[in-house]
Length: 480
Image (tube, rainbow, N blue to C red; front, top):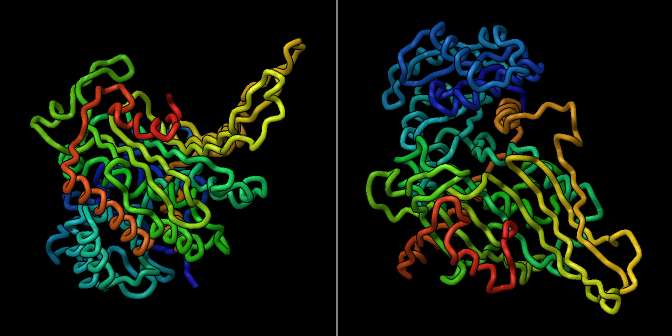
């Protein structure tokens, strides 16, 4: 039986992720009474500071990143915090860290938010200090490698000290409410599941669009690119949730068993099923922005945009294309899933001057969480020519539907699940390796075929070839 941990150890506690997400999430959980009274939080990083200085650092982060209406109990939360400086590249300091963590009666949860190059040294330090024994589990923040080989190297290093049931690989998209709600929509409503297959669905679109450029991620992004930064993790996880078979239960093993089946069923992408691009100077939200090379300060072939046509080769999805699209410096920030249904097999209204359009389900993940189902309806009034039909949306805006409910940061869910030992919303090793196998094949295809990024103006929806990728099949992207 997994017990709720009474110790939480944060590596990278002074980093950007800790300031923006981890500390605010933990403070909010504490204010809502979701953290056990005996939970002690120990921060560690290379920065030299005392516990008092770390608490001051945390207070400043909370004032900057935590909304005013969620700042109750900050003083009580800060009292949970302590800090020990540790250089992860040496064993020095780990014994002191272990003394600060103290005896964990119920369990120890470790959150590793450091460079992947430090993972192995950090694991060695934890083993040296005896911080891997007993009920200890570890959360790993991405990136977990740059290809299958490096991913296996990282996973092997972690597996030396932690069994798979104690490893929590984080994809923060899985902590978003609307992503979790996708499972509820599919498996808690009999209305959708009978038509969730190739007999009724024409195609699926998944878009993750950003308006920003490189920002503070220059070194990481140029080594990564859009395919590895977004498609390999977030988008393939969304695809798996859309395409998975009904699990036997909402449990970590059952859900992840079905996701990995989808990932293993992905057909290798052909050369005419992929488009890659890189933004040039343009305008976003009415403001001029530089091109990628200008931001980077040198020429680069790194892609900032990817569009793919994917296929899941199984009975449920035979012949249904999944169009994936992600990019930087696009016109708007949006993450959404579009499920386009087929036309009705026979329209009784054709002779009456009316045409029908297929139903469409749009699941908005960010910036707004909503679900919209487009339906055909008769336009009110009298018409001598026949009957007029129009497509109308049935909208469920999650903030309105659940008014009064706290809107949470994705990391609140993930940190709480790590502390409580629930792996359902975390990525299993066989999932991440199946994802990398598919992504590595695409990168090899680009290399073999000499496929280079096509240019697109900042503020546009990517290269024209991305529009053509869908239009060849008679499909328009949802924004078109």
